[in-house]
Image 1 (cartoon, rainbow, N blue to C red):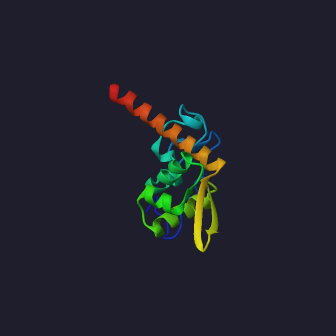
Image 2: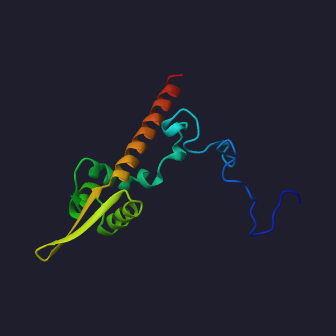
Image 3: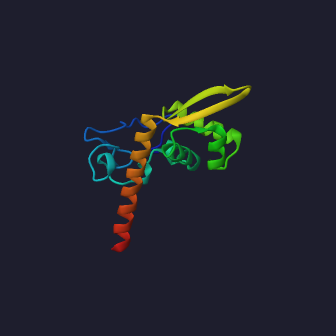
Length: 143
């Protein structure tokens, strides 16, 4: 049968063509032309998935409004469990968006988080992108 492949094989498709378009999606890749933030059209598929997650967005937003927050303070703000908060802060830390400082107050451990410069830039880019999506949606709704 034409067009069928053997199990386990995939078509070799270049990630991006010469014009910067993703041939699998028929659109330009992020940062390549267009009319939205960072030079591309407002497209929800291009949102930073690391920041877009509800809990991680709450963490980054809370840290943007405060110089630093303890684990307990972030737990209260995000209304999440210790384990869930730990996983999400670790992902943000691995991405370089959040710094984590561990210390002791007497014999009590204290974990403190702060937003890094990269985290602040990622949040600003995310907010700019969301704003472009909202503006685009409002234009479409008006006709």
